[in-house]
Length: 423
Image (cartoon, rainbow, N blue to C red; front, side, top):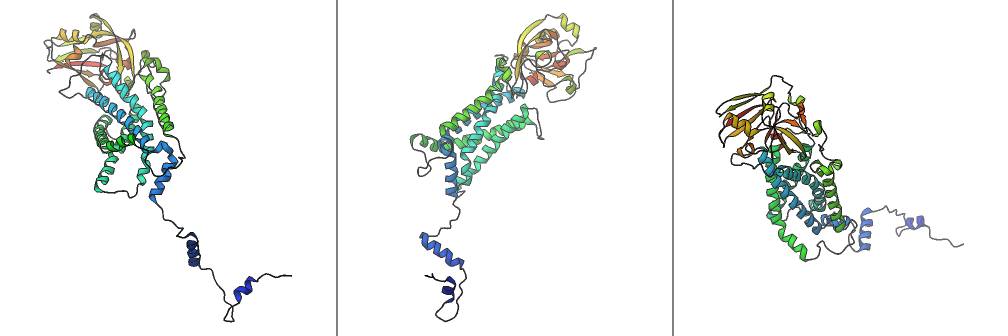
């Protein structure tokens, strides 16, 4: 029988004649492993490798060229939103130098619908853009120079401002106001910050973007991507934006009204087949049998007209839309007295302005200004009927303003007074 070596004896044997017991030495074990590999096998974290791994996971869909295409789309979308947003703001809060025309009739309907529907469709585009560039948050070193530090700092107002605009805009069209500030003012001033930051960002990135079209993709040695392709990402984003637009555009394009799943109001749904934003109950208005319309101010003769007096005047019928800042709009048939006929009866100057005052006791839009281009227009009415019926209380009974190319908040309901003043 052949016996193998006895480990215990091997360990116990020694040249000194006494047992030598060896305990494990972690440092020697590590050294042996290092010698075996030729170099240290314990690596510290490498941010550049982390970024490369994230990029490989994102596939070609997360590369610089995809980010550039998405950036171009965002640039176009933000430009349209900025221009249409300014139109909306200056129409609702006109400065002294701005006098808006009354024609074309549907101008505000078009620009505000484009602003809101396009803004909603921008949300998937922005999220995709952030997905393609988020690895840069892990860039190492985080700052390479003073210029690079400034460039990175300027990205913050662009990203934060864009998210603020889209989120608060979404809340606004849903009539949800969890914030303490006045939405139109905050939205207006933030738009300048975002668009200014966008122009600076485009100027900084323009040379890089031009270089991408003429060369190969950057990013180190070729590695098979794990994620979606660039074409797949762009097609998915385009489809998402198109879907959002499709289920929203019906709020202003009546034939697609049945698809308006994301719209706060749908054409044809509401009292007298027209949506309502603010009811009479919310405004604190009730029926008053003794109601009379006062025409006062810079007039030759003051008037006090009952509902019967107005109905005795020449009646006119027009087809005009209500177009609201939330993006929805709907056409209706209105009948009543031309505003210019009432003002001429009071004796007003041709360049006078008219302040329309509501029975509503309070509210930012309980009054509105009507400039000469609008009150001279034959389509501008003191409406008494809607879609062949007397105005319901929620739509402004006994009398409301309806004029072409004006935001819905300026189509004053429950009119009590017309105050004429100079230009």
